[in-house]
Length: 442
Ligand code: GDP
Ligand code: MG
Image (cartoon, rainbow, N blue to C red; front, side):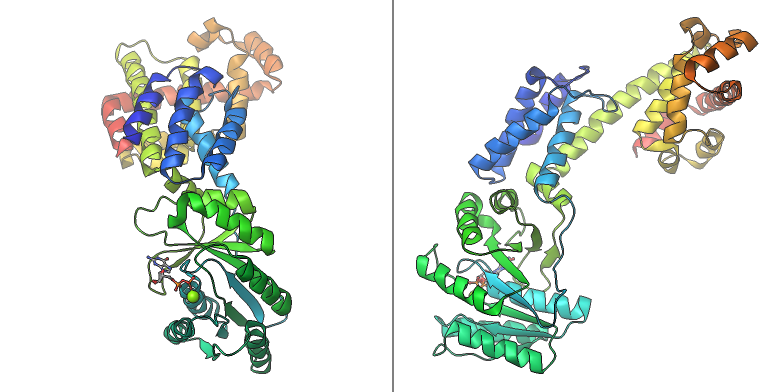
């Protein structure tokens, strides 16, 4: 399966310092498969892979432990970005009523979504909501809207199949104005397939009601077909957002990427289940994880990271045990290790109390900027000085300070910190480094 395939690739790619055409090609093949399995449309997959390749090649693998992890990071970031980066919300900033027009194929979930939106707007934003159905082809559709509106606690503006959609909408707008509704949700008819007459009708309706939001409702299970539908509606109407429905259970959500890619419009909500509570705001980063399949991949990356950290910690503990002590090189490594793991404070959250206490003596000076200064100072030392810091007397201190562009006091402070750290490390080694690492994994 996909996770196993990727696990293999992540492992074989260990120990390379840079992302290259070579070392990412196998990984990109897996990502491509993951996207296709998630039902992202093929042309979208191609574009996406090309973009990721361009971004990834030549990237250093600093701060990340394997090229595989670095690449997964790039893929996840690009996916998130493609789906809109930050989260998009409904725009209701207009003279009331704020009119929201629903568009989409029959069965996409428009009527259901009107009910869900009505409920959300009423309960979360305390809006006074009116609904109206312009679906004059099926009497049952109007009844259905009436039923869900009732459930949502929204007022329903009646209509009949004998009326024209534009007349219905205008009457509803008039009613909404006179009764001070905040929001008017306009439900429309869809066809089973893209259809010229349907497009003309909704275009005319759009021109007549001038909605502030025109939401394209699309079924996530459409998969590959989502692209064509999205393109047709996007060309016919100035869409302001997308609602992706039926993202239930194990639907992978590839349609999110496809639809976003062809329309360029933000996905504002996702629908889950038939109940009216099943409407969620859209979070691009979560959807990226979902498309990649990937609680799995992300935990895989995490696991790889822990393994490498553990290896380093073991070698390090060994050093302490053999009495060789640890030098400024180790100090530098430890500091960048801490940075990688999210800083000292996040590390301490994971430690048992007695370790956290010991480690707290290290705090101060390990913030991002300070870390870079410390690294700068250590870089200005000779290998011999790093291995034997007691060599560093006044004249060497001056030379190091000049080299690193800092004051002599800062060199002193670093040497003091280093000494403190040595003490803490000795304490830790008595408590057992293995125990520490195990507790951090948990
Ligand atoms: P419309 O033709 O676009 O108005 O679509 P409907 O709102 O009538 O929905 C068509 C069918 O899909 C109905 O049976 C709904 O209950 C169902 N449906 C709508 N949204 C969702 C959803 O998010 N999840 C699931 N599982 N079913 C949905
Ligand atoms: Mg309907």
